[in-house]
Image (cartoon, rainbow, N blue to C red; front, side, top):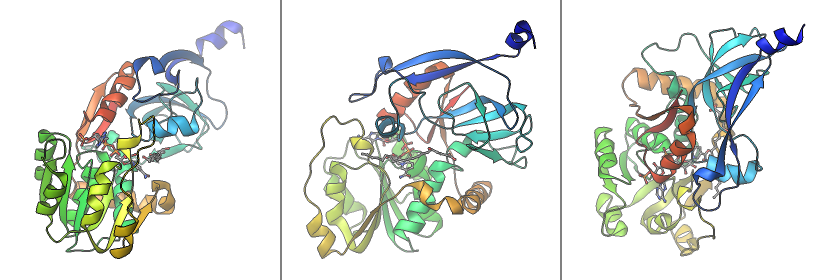
Length: 338
Ligand SMILES: NC(=O)C1=CN([C@@H]2O[C@H](COP(=O)(O)OP(=O)(O)OC[C@H]3O[C@@H](n4cnc5c(N)ncnc54)[C@H](OP(=O)(O)O)[C@@H]3O)[C@@H](O)[C@H]2O)C=CC1
Ligand SMILES: CCCCC/C=C\CC(=O)/C=C/C=C/C=C/[C@@H](O)CCCC(=O)O
């Protein structure tokens, strides 16, 4: 092959790198937009074009744990297969790809999840990054595997209007529970009420978190789905019922801390109330994902599970969308549309 024809087959890809490790809250200068040319796929490979990308809270702590400066920002996307030398992923098919903040990527197929061609036309593919994807699975597993929630129980969830929290509250309602949720704006609180939450409040404006939690559930909480961490948890723990279960899903209130937070020690409440508190990562139940995705999709199709997305247009806006999500700009799942 001549030099000229080889050049013609190259395609340009844009990607965001972590230029500098975040110190405290991320800032624009921590990110850098780069470009490179990609060759045609080799045997077994596919060329992917991003359609929707995800920004998620885990990217903040994982950047420190899993990345070095100069690495491509990690993350998942929905992409279209535009060239294929892998029969499992034909041209025109769509996949969820774990290839980071990139417009185009080469993949050997090992990090791809095929979106089946029978995906309902009326549902955006971006839901595979939210309610019918990793965040929805997180909600389901946290409730079923950790909380082991039962009909008639009372559940508390924070960051309740977000990708995970909004699904947590709705599944708990499907299961016949009483659901209390909180979020950081009055608009979000209205959304929670629309979703059928029994009690919803703005944690930023209540005069006393303790009194509000007490008013919402005077008998206390059987289950607490913890997305936020920090001081909030210290207030909740004394209001758990005997044998209460706490699913420690996330700790977003601490991800940008430069110094470790300290708080009241929880041991007394844990012992006297005989509480069970368990941290988890969604991957623990990967073997159930296939069936669980189907369950989530069925609930959406039946109208039992509502989905909302906060969509930012343009790949160049990824850092801004990520930082806005960390600040609470999103109601529902934060998505970037190319
Ligand atoms: N363990 C696991 O496997 C997984 C864990 N997670 C965790 O679940 C949680 C929610 O994730 P996800 O649903 O994707 O994100 P969200 O869509 O909920 O977006 C993040 C939200 O967090 C809230 N928030 C931000 N800072 C604070 C703060 N200081 N105090 C209280 N709330 C804050 C904001 O909402 P508001 O306006 O209400 O403050 C913001 O909208 C995160 O902690 C994440 O790390 C997510 C996926 C998998
Ligand atoms: C204070 C430190 C806390 C550390 C824990 C941090 C975050 C918890 C969390 O949010 C974890 C989420 C992990 C998600 C990872 C997803 C992708 O790597 C893969 C998704 C694949 C798919 O969508 O199919």
